[in-house]
Length: 230
Image 1 (cartoon, one colour):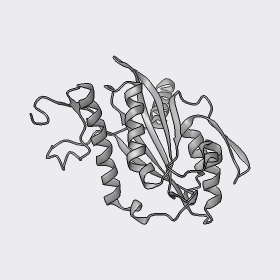
Image 2: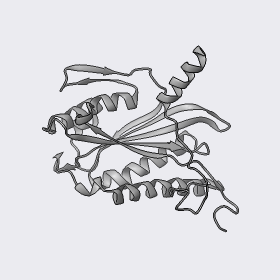
Image 3: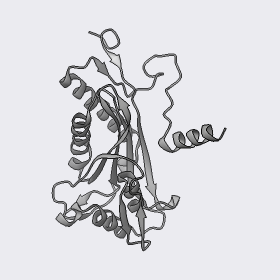
């Protein structure tokens, strides 16, 4: 059986943002926004409050083996990372923004996100802050969107270690992107669905069609307000 003959293609979305002080960002604020919660930012002496801004279906902060127990607290962990960075333009973290296909219900979405964190990030020493956001309804229940926030520094001997430069490479990014697609397809197969995702571009797949554009939540809200006032 070849892909496309008996299998349907699901929409694939995978995007990475760098959280950098050089861009005026705080990793504590990024974690608060992602998890729609309130966290105190020790570096700036203020709260980042995003409570009830979005519907969080599930979230968890996962530490690699050897991570200090006190870092299981989200506020404590991200403030510790901020304190470990000296440079005023430091790159603090990477936020992976991924779509969860409609075929996956909440337990399946949690499972695949946890596998992604464990096999890609935690095994390399990185903590992973995971979040699933409710985005609307589908025939199978709620639609979910996922986020994975990791620091740029792995945990080594209970402390933040040196930044592995290979994680800045395009090769590494493509490797992680392909792994995410593979894990989604594994979950589809385990659940008996005849649907798959493909991380490759249309050009790489030999498809003469423009790529599907992903419209972020902020842009959707702006467009909705524009329609209401027109």
